[in-house]
Length: 422
Length: 133
Image (tube, rainbow over all chains, first blue to last red; front, side, top):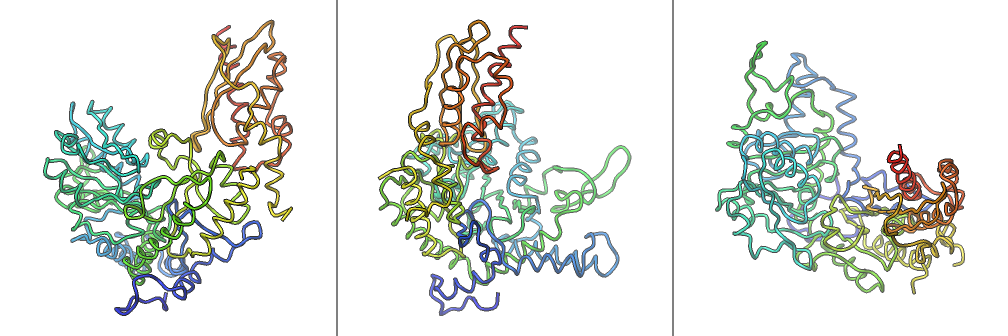
């Protein structure tokens, strides 16, 4: 991207002209599903990709594809360099003091599972307490359930308030005796922004390690693990303009150094004998087998793209869209919005419309060219708590516009007419 | 503005909305002869079917659950269709019959919704048959 450059005199919120330039970088936005302009409001599930990311991966396959870390020849060295450069970019992007703390995994789910297996199996014992919250994505819940069953440990949950924020009233009691506290930085269903720094500090004060699901945070706000002072943090590339198939587990070096391998195979060993082997240092110890090289390079390009805009501006623009959307949707009759007020949330908005089921609403919006998510958002216990079987979720990103929010509101109007809701 | 729903008014025909909002045979049966509940884990649609059988026929059937208009209307229509039918006749009911009964074009993404009721009904009767063996 050449045109949208972060300069000191740029106002925080992206201008209309800048958003137009950003949109021009996303080839998919020219598509016309059902003959209508594509209005993509499902970036919280997976974002679209700018041409810069697509080309970075294409360039690798066309010019220097080879396996990494082994080849003695020139193009293998180029590939290794690009892969490790992507790691260094990610480390800088999330405020990691050292690139080796960033492990390439398939996605955040694999990152969280890695912690549950490699750290959890060796540190959690019978009767130990694992603390998580009532608003977690299944990927930050089920791995801890499995670990707890296996070790006969106990799961505890931080409850949520009526308006969908963490209820921290009894956090110290809940943390009492806990070995691990796993929580999300931003709720994928309610859009709630959690106080990660405070939660990590309070976990540390009681001797628990903190594991942060940062899937919805890293794409949409400045993230700094040094400031957060957490112990582990995981996110996926595909939600932040990068390709699918790659993600990052960040962990504090001393914790990673003490952990045994997760998956075993090539690339993660030091010396191998027939009976036993010694393992490589981090991060290689956790990257067995040939990794997703093109995807890692693509993630590096996505980081470049976001950094060129500036994450403070990405966040400010998304908050602008969230504010407009909350304002317009809350004025719509029969629309119920879940989650906290704008001061505690981001541009992920879950709603229901009258007695129209989320799937029916999503089907009708689809015919208008509007892509939204419908269902339980991998958040079944939370849905039970909210007392709704499913919600429709709209989420916004840098390529969305206020006009697309108007299209969403109009689409909801169409659904209400079809369902004969006055 | 008559035709701005581009096929959606066809998908959500009046009788579909009617079955969604006023489901036939809604509820549960006390001590049913066959019963099963299942959900569609992708979307959280849930359907339970209770059956009373007599002389190899479905004497009574009730369904309960929650979900989209397509899944609920489809289940409602299905209960109407199978009441008084023999188990052998029900065994022959397939996907096409359900879709024909709905009379609408269902996209691949929504097929699971339309077929959840049938899946639950068949499972209830399969369990019943196993018990009888």
